[in-house]
Length: 78
Image (cartoon, rainbow, N blue to C red; front, side):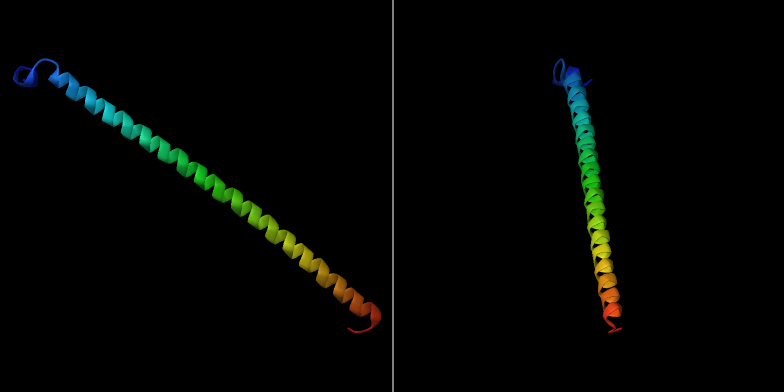
């Protein structure tokens, strides 16, 4: 009916345009999912690094306190 009213090929061009828009929407969604996954992985990596730094700082502080306490006991302060 559309082809008869607006000329040959009109309906097919409408279908082609619809398919193109659907494909572009799927591609945009896939790209957004990939970017979200990359962002989440980057956040996880940053958290791992932060936890490692925190653990190292705790170990260093613990060793410092241990050395200070043992030194104080050795010289008879504590």
